[in-house]
Amino acid sequence: MLLTLVLWIDAQLERYRSAVIRDIDAASSTRFMIPAQFTSNNPSDNYPLLPQQDGKEVCFKFISKKGCPSGDQNVCIFASRAHFYPAAISDQLRNYLRRMFGGVHSNYK
Image (tube, one colour):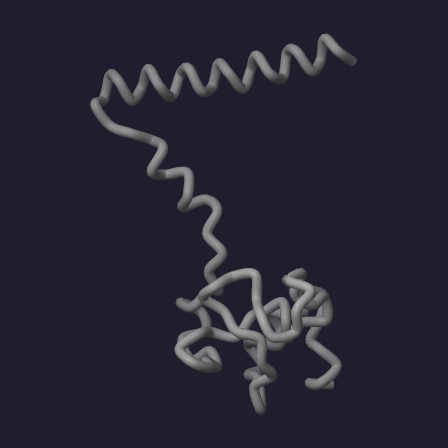
């Protein structure tokens, strides 16, 4: 088990060393590409008319069966989103919530 851990750490460090060498050779930086992999944006290209409140989009997890992990009904963990129940949601959004979060909140049944 320890050998497996050591080999995994070595492989991760080798990936890092390789990225550094590529950056030096190409005079570029791959570190700016990493945050793009971890964005928390709603898919606005598919849902251009998402309900908004105070300039913030509705939190998908909040209106889903799963719920938002923030623990506070009034504040989302993502600053760009808000917790509120829109009067109605589109069928397209309803299908997305079913597929990604296991269904919609009981308010929309």
